[in-house]
Length: 333
Ligand code: NAD
Ligand code: UDP
Image (cartoon, rainbow, N blue to C red; front, side, top):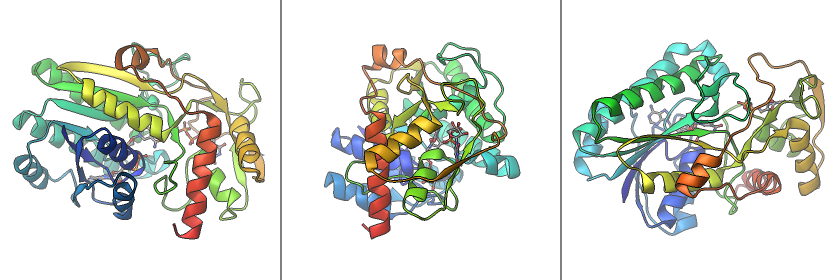
């Protein structure tokens, strides 16, 4: 298949490009590089030995998006492009609503116009809100605590309503849990701009000495050791889930959780990182972060049963690969 990957230069997108190419698909990337670098696509080529066609474009611009659809007979779209920083979304709600919703609407419109019937959307476990665990695809969604989360819930609704009106259109909504780690080559990984918001890149930056110490946000939750629990998933497993989803996509809507089904606490993750990589990560316990949920993880059975997908990599793989990428970054690759 020939797949348009929006946001393909980014963290999850670049890993998905690798898996798509290795599965024999053709990849066209559309990315405005607002949170990534073109070099990541050079690395994708280095890993796979295959070429990627790259358009440096903003996918909220209808005319440029239409030009891509007109110039290539596409079989599917995987829509990763979006802004994703929760805190920033509270400061700049309009940018988030505009970027994340307009991009989804334009890509949906063009998919309908050019008869591209496979659309995979990057959603997030955040759409479940503070539900009971494990999160299941059939749950009624609860409000999220920030504009970022709302853009995911709203994009899901836009896509579901579009399918209701046009039954030949096919959409798969993938709800990611906490993607971490990097490709085992160490050539692509997560490269946050400025101070990382997420736990794993913060840990790797403390381990490399780029930051002094990790703040652990709260140790008084009702969890195994009082720290927050999440379902961390290796980014390569996540990327493989996209290949399976796009290959199996049929008309209608399907929703899949992509997680491992297992929860890991902040302290467990930090200690596993230190043990596996034989490094020290100084940390201190701080107050809870506003808007955080104590604990959540996926019921990952639907993706296993229907897509034949399962997260294979362990927490040890995740911390080892995350550190390998950080080291390569420091060495200049
Ligand atoms: P990322 O920032 O690394 O990748 C997003 C890419 O989209 C970047 O390369 C950026 O330059 C590009 N982009 C943003 N707006 C664009 C626009 N208007 N036009 C063209 N390109 C644009 O983020 P990621 O972690 O790879 O996330 C990919 C998707 O998965 C996002 O939609 C994100 O919300 C979603 N998601 C991520 C996580 C996570 O923890 N990383 C969790 C759940 C969902
Ligand atoms: N966390 C932390 N220190 C950090 C970043 C995150 O203690 O510097 C905790 C956070 O409170 C949560 C977990 O790590 O319990 C995962 O946070 P992250 O931001 O990576 O993911 P999300 O909260 O979006 O699931």
